[in-house]
Length: 182
Image (cartoon, rainbow, N blue to C red):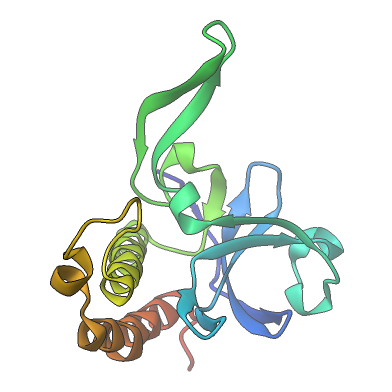
């Protein structure tokens, strides 16, 4: 596990609240943006960013996003390019939390317990986001199957997920990643 824990911090960047997750192996500050309702149909969340000014220590002063990725790209299974086989192979490593040594962090803002809680919340959020999209469309849309839409479409489930369940989970993420106020 990552042994160094640093204080929690929040800031703003490009009009949204961001949470400091930690510092990576390149000594870059790694931030996760708060969730927001995007394009009037889905939740944009789990965005991991590094900013340009002062190695990203002060996001509200940044004019450039140096890198943009997703929380799901930090944890879980990962592919690695095998130059001998000239192709991508699935690594046997599974990264459970940002506190895992293989996550790329040298310091994080979370205790091990909190890192596990964040992984749980983010996994649930990603699953619910995908579920809301499937229930809203009436399927995965890989192909057309007769009667699939009638079987799968659940507008009321989509609305409950997007308007009640996900916002409640985003509040939990905010509580977990925000510094305690004295």
